[in-house]
Amino acid sequence: MSGPIAYDADAEHPHVLAFQWVRGGAPDEPYHEATGVCPVCGCGMTKRWAYGQSVVRKGGFLGRRREPDAGEPWYTSCTCRTLHLGRPREEESGCGAWLTLAPPGPGQGGGAS
Ligand SMILES: [Zn+2]
Ligand SMILES: [Zn+2]
Picture 1 (cartoon, protein in one colour):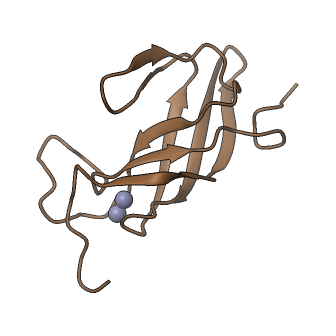
Picture 2: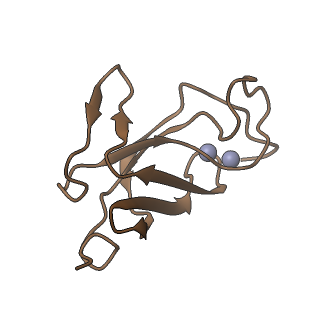
């Protein structure tokens, strides 16, 4: 690849990505944070979910995640801080790619007692 990566809202990465998970926050208001590298634009990115926050899947699925460690993949758009060419004004970050993340596993913030 050469030159800057342009924003592409249709970019989709089909593989499940293994990001580094961190669990933090107050006991009654925990959050999960995933950090990794967007495979589409190659930038580092971090995405944070508050507990119980709605998870929106591309295609219109809207659900509430009751159990954060249910083993289902998590979905996020790229949230890198790089200014990608052609990014819409309403998007404050990312390259437009839609990513599928492997859920937090044991020892990755999901098994805290
Ligand atoms: Zn990206
Ligand atoms: Zn990027």
